[in-house]
Image (cartoon, rainbow, N blue to C red; front, top):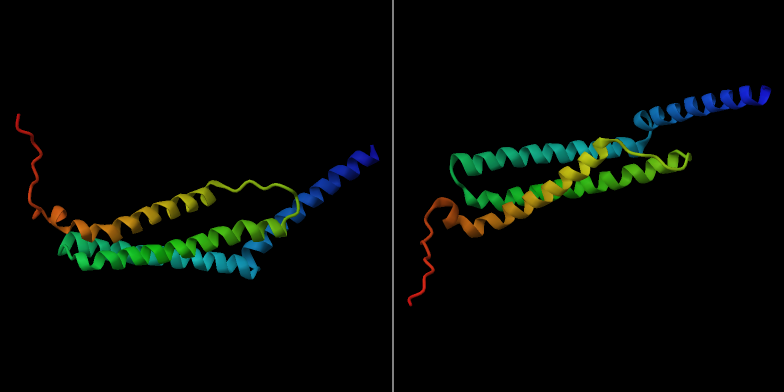
Length: 146
């Protein structure tokens, strides 16, 4: 009976200590602040790229800005990949409980990174198809005479 009470108390202490460690990680560690700063910086670069793409495609069809948008997206991708790799490595070093399952936000971060890679490739390749986008391309007919 005493052993069970001691075990329950030690489990409660362990859970409180684990919760305290998680809160300390979120507030006090330099790597957590660096991860947050990298993700926020990537978001700011993404917003700037989005605004430039709206101006380039909707207002004036300025195709010279499209590679710039692609480069901005690739910079944001690099920042996010660094942050998404640092976070689980350092987090698992701080918590010694074995296995930890990350929330949907971590998967959402990887999904957004993959989408930004695709958009960066698209914006870098789009100037090659300027005539097709603007409607100035000559129509090609494929037919065979029998």
